Length: 127
Image (tube, rainbow, N blue to C red; front, side, top):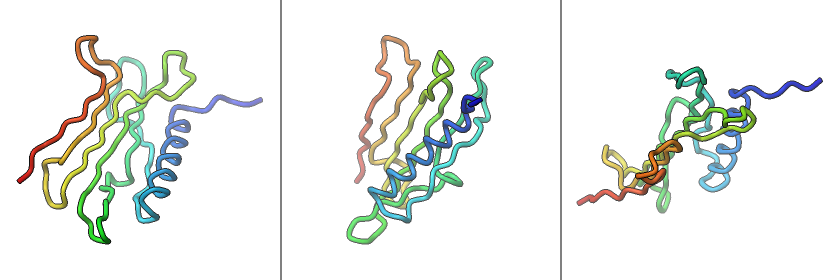
């Protein structure tokens, strides 16, 4: 008898898919993605965070030089049927090396009010 996968197992599969995609595009030096229990609970549902191991930045190279860093994470939970992994929050920030303010960031939040978009891209000015 097959047992249904746990939320953690589904999130680990997602982390493996992300690792394969990022290494396929950016090369083998990309830190791998991992699934970890979220420190917060939403009501009674448990969440899982999928991010790079040790929250390491992903180095983006230009002509062999580390020029930008990408930080991304996903906060996941079960969908309403407890069948599929749902990404509740996703963040992608791209920063110049040694700077705290990103060049741009893309953020998604599934449960936004109808008066606000669930995703936005924000560009930051840099000298």
